[in-house]
Length: 92
Image (cartoon, rainbow, N blue to C red; front, side, top):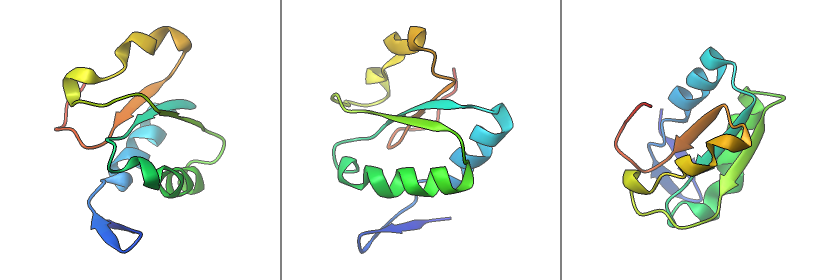
């Protein structure tokens, strides 16, 4: 389902992300956004948090140059899941 964010419609596939969070019972999630979506981080956070109460969302604030620039080097910090918006689908 496409979600409207500040008068623009993006198909962020938030419903799929929420299903995946619930299926994996993830509690601490790192979210990476391309620069164009960073101003909408709070709306994305509210949508996910409403459907998945009790989770901790952390937004990656560094640069984002595509799927090859995913912050996988932070795995040791204990994140259960990385959601990288704006990339082609991939699974690790």
